[in-house]
Length: 166
Figure 1 (tube, rainbow, N blue to C red):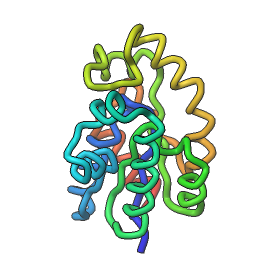
Figure 2: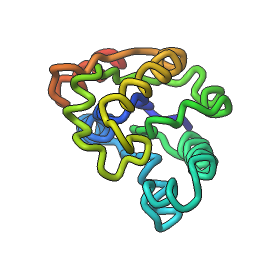
Figure 3: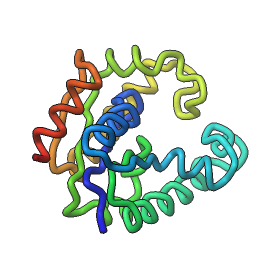
Figure 4: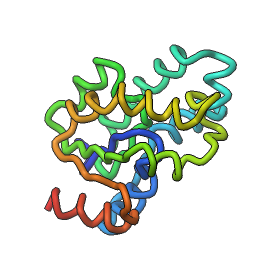
C-alpha cells in the first residue's frame, strides 16, 4: 500500500488545499500529517512547538509520516518540515512525490502574518525566505515532479498534478 500522491513543499504552497481537490477528483481519501499530529496529541502544532520544542515536534512528525505512508493509499500532504529528517526522505524514495513550489512573494501573501506558525515568529518575510532557501533543495531531492504554484489557483495546480500522474 502506498499513497496515490504525496505532496511536499513549504508553508503557503497550498498542499492541504490541493490535496483536497485531488482527493475529490480521484475519489480518494485525503490525509494531512499535521492534522494527524494534532488529532493524536490533542494539541495544536504551535502549542507543541512552544511547550515541547521543535525536536519533539519533529519526532512526532516523523512517526506520523511513517504511519501515513504505511497505512494510506489516497492523497497525502506532508507538513513543510517533514522532509528534513533523513529517515523520512528514505521512506519517500520511489513514491509519487510532488513538490509544490512557491516563490517568496506568493508564500508571504498566502501565509499572511504567520499566526499559528511557530517558525515564522519575528519578521515573516525574512523567515519565509530563509526556510525557502534552506528547504527547496531538499524538496527537489525527494520529488518525482515539481509544480510551480505562483500566480495559479489551487484548481490549476491540482489539474497539473493530475496530468503529471496520469
